[in-house]
Each structure stands twice: as structure tokens, then as C-alpha cells.
Length: 116
Length: 111
Image 1 (cartoon, rainbow over the protein chains, first blue to last red):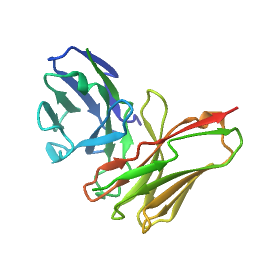
Image 2: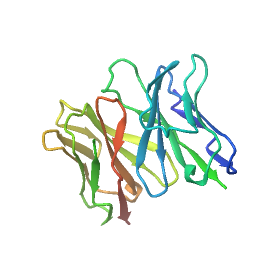
Image 3: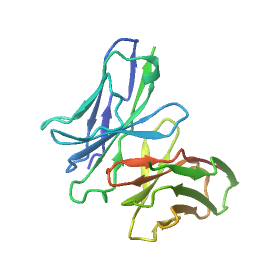
């Protein structure tokens, strides 16, 4: 049973380019969460999605960032017009749907974004 | 607003020693608390999950306790080994269903 998969593992972008980060949840999981870990800082929640729905995006920057979790395929975190301050490790987690608030979240290996 | 604090920020111990990592949170209205391990440049590995109705959980040499009313959790590691060297993260889930993380304790076990 494969765990949470993220790709790419490393991504280098120049300022102004777009970054697309992908996350495939564990089999049977329909809840996806994105977190960001800035250098020398703790992990911070960004967005929580279920299939085709954004449930909570209170941690997402208001501009340039968007996320989706389509009916088919992985969840995508998209960052437009990247800036150096976006350089960070982005982690995806997934959980079961059966009991909101009580589910263990399983994390992927992360995507390390470097903006030149 | 939920805030999670972990003390100490870093800890070095000789191999074989028992140790305790501390986690405190400001809002006791949590659903559960998870302890994770993060190795340098890697993702997070879930170690233990304690539901809000539970007092402790055990897995091998690890034991985590939860005192929800006082906003505290501890992670006890018995007979530490060099392979235990990593950053240990504590996180709580509130009604929003997302995890609030502490900044971690960086553990070094010296052979």
C-alpha cells in the first residue's frame, strides 16, 4: 500500500515563473492537506481539500497561491509568479473521511521549492 | 488562536539514556494530538496519535501522554539509540481539522 506521494521532490524556478506541486493521497483517503515549512520555521497549515471541494483555505496566501483536488488525479498546489520568499518545503498529508477531526494524517516526502 | 510550544528546542543525550520531550498548547479544545519524527531533508513520520479522550499511547520504546486540561503532552523515549536522532514534532488538531505544529525538538543521541 503506497503512502502519500508527492512530485517533484525538488523544484527549481526563477522569479516570476509558475510552480506546480502534485500530491497523490494514500489509497482510500479522500482528504488532503497542504503544509509549508519555511527555512528555520515550523510547519504551517495552508489548505484542506476533499474531492472537488476546498474545505478550509485559511492558511493560504491571498494572492498567487491556489489549490485543487479534482475528481480524478492528484491534488495540485499552484504558485504563480514565484518570489524568493516562496522557497520552502511543501508537504502534503492525507486522511480518511470517516471521522472528521479524529483522523491520523499521513505525510508525503515533500517538495522542496527553490526560487532563484 | 492555537499556539504549540516545544521545550527544549535541542537536546543531546548519551546512548541508552531515557528522555522526555515536552509539548504545550494554549487551546485545550483539541480533537487529537500527534507526535511526528522528521529526519533532515525528509518528510514526517507519524509516531503516535492520542485522541482527546485518551491519556496515553505506547509504541515500542515510545510512550506519549496527554493532559488535555492543562494543555500538555510528553513523549518519553526509553533506552535511546543513535537512530533516534531526528527532530520531533508535536501537533494538535482543532475543530478546523488541520494540524497546528510546534517548532520541534532536535534530538541527538551520542553513541
